[in-house]
Length: 470
Figure 1: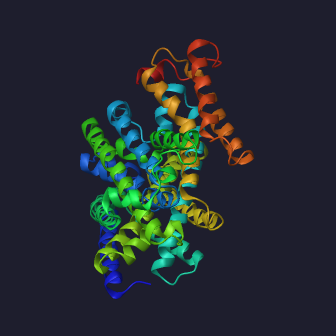
Figure 2: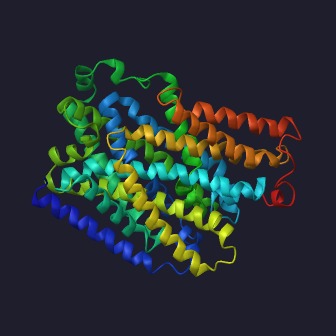
């Protein structure tokens, strides 16, 4: 349990967050404002939107958990995210932002034809839902170490908090709170990392406390498995609606690119801080729940008010990422799936549906996560990234870089078969070869067929009139 100073710090942070969330509600006048902020975000807001959406339980609690169990290999997740942001800034920000679209599905439909849109939306939404449950999992050790909650009560309260951040203001609420969260993360996580480094005794202390293998190895569980985890983050990040939604929302290409570059620098730094904290907690407290390493460090080893702000920041990070993922699922449903049922739905109806979908998605995630308690957070995240990545990554690269050389008719095959193979492998061969190594080669072969074999796609699909806009 926490003391009075820690509770007071948490209360102040949550009060500021609540005011930002309430204020953002006033900025929403249409479904476009709710979903992508009216496409008027500057570079700093794009940066805050990306970090706010991505830097949640996996970046903080999950990275520290992995470092506690396996050492420096816990940094793979944030290294992959940084590389993904760099690729977006250098190669993808311009084509993604210049098109008048709101979702990844709409962008791909412009090249491959309208048939790919619903499939892309379905598989990306499934992958994001898995990661949403991961945020719920990461919230359990945090909430139960702070408050006298049962597990399910903690999950329910966390779900309500995530909804409070996003239900009124949508993307504008996420961007505003994301900027505040970014400031808190820079201060609290970096301070905690610096304190852990000092407590360890620097490099000499690390060398004296840990053996080189496995603690200083980037591949403690095997080269293929660890590389697959990092690769899955790269392809999954670029393929996730929630994480590139700020790019669509940037006021221009320059803002989208600058915000992505800032995220590419800061995300690996957050991971490094988490790794140092995890190693210290392994040395000082070898018998604790690994998932509780980060919140316990903030409670036990920091001044009360700093620890309280740090714990509140962790809670905010988890809730922000959860709400951003839920908003991404809602966006895909309302923009790519709901029009198939209600093609004449007006803007107000879509706004209402978007909020209803948020409620359903968060409630369902609470139930599913309750049944996954005890599982390794990063492993579920890597599966989620793999599912999204094999669906979108190579088709997206093809649409951007292979104009005039790729037969768009392969699009439907490229966005359906790879994720189906990935899911089947994950279900029937758990613990075997990483699912990314199954789905990505299938995607590559299909895309290669679209270049080498002119009739492989069974028609020209979205090529021609729709492709000229790209």
